[in-house]
Length: 396
Image (cartoon, rainbow, N blue to C red; front, side, top):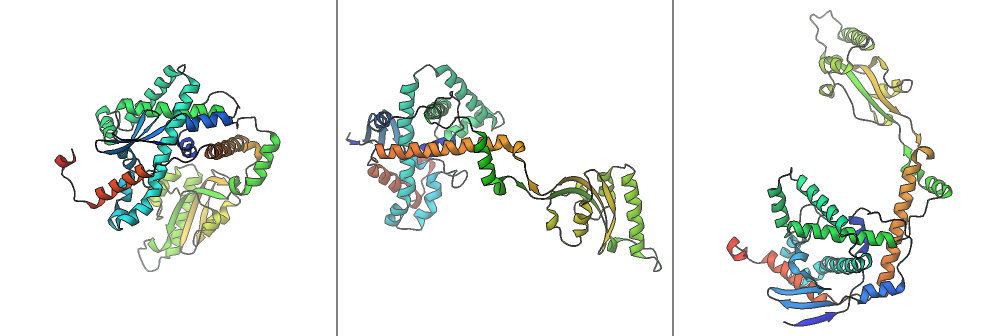
C-alpha cells in the first residue's frame, strides 16, 4: 500500500455547511476563533492519499473518503434526486475524456474539499466540546432518524431501503447528523453575531429595505356569480335576453344579501370559470383585472370585507360579487414587522461572520493537493458513463 501525505486544506465548505443545517443554540458566547486555533485546525490532522483495493481513497484524521462517496454525493442543489455522477453523465457522453476532465474537475474538487473541510472542522469541534454532550446528541440524531422514517409513511423497511441506496445504514445516518449538529454548535459558539439589535439598527434596516420587503401591493379576494348574458335561455323571440339576465341578477343579489350561502348560489347559478370553487377567486391585484372584470375593481374600492355588490352590469355579463378580503397598497409599519426585521439582521450578521471566518481560514491554510484523488474520481465517472452497461452480477 502506498501512502502520500497532503497538507491539510482550508475550511472552504464552512459556508455551505452552515447553510445546510439550522442553527443549534449553544448560549450567547461571542469569542472568536484565534489565529492559533485556526492554525491548529489547518495542521493538526494530516490528509493521506492511500491506494487500496478498488483504487485511491483519502484518509482525513482517521476518516476515509472514498471515490464512491464523492461520485454518489447528492446533487440536490442542482437537480433534485440525482447524484453527481448521474448529473455529469450526459456531459461525459458528449465530450472527450480530456474535455470532460477539464469541466468536471471543478465540481468534483468542490465536493472533495467540502468533505475534507467538514471532517477537519468536526474533529476540532469534538475535541473542543468534549464528550459532555454525547447523550443529547444521541437523542437529537435519533429524532432525525424518526423524521426520516416518517417521510416514508413510518415504513421502516422502505426507509432502510432508501438509506441503503445512499450507501448508508441507520447508524451511519445518525453519525452524520451528530457530526453536523456538533460542528454547527461549535461554530455558533465561535461566531459573534448574537448581540442585541438596537432600535436604530432596526429603523435603518427597515428604511433601507422597506420598498423591497415590506411594501404590500393592493390585493382583492372575492367570490363571484358571473351571469353570461349570451347563455341566458329565451323561450320566444319577443323575450329580451339582456333584460332576463338583469332580472336574474337582481334576484340572486337579493338572495345573497338576505343571507343565503353565496358559495352555494355561485355553484348553482354562475356561468364563471370558478363556479366549482363556489365562485372564489385567488387573490388578485385590482390593476391586473382586465375587461370585463374591471368593474369589480371599481366596486371594491368602496367596499369592506363581507359586503356584497351587484348586480354589476358590464359588457356581456352581470356580476354579483362578495368581497372576502381586501389589502390596500402601502408599507407594513415597523412595529408590525419588527420581529422579522430583527431576525433578518441576525441572519445577515451570521452570514457575514461565516464569510469572515471562511476568509480567515483560507489565509491560515494552503489548499491541499488533492488533484490526484479528484482525477481518479473524474476518470471513474467518465468510464461509468461511457463504458458498456454492466449486468447486476458484474456490478457486485
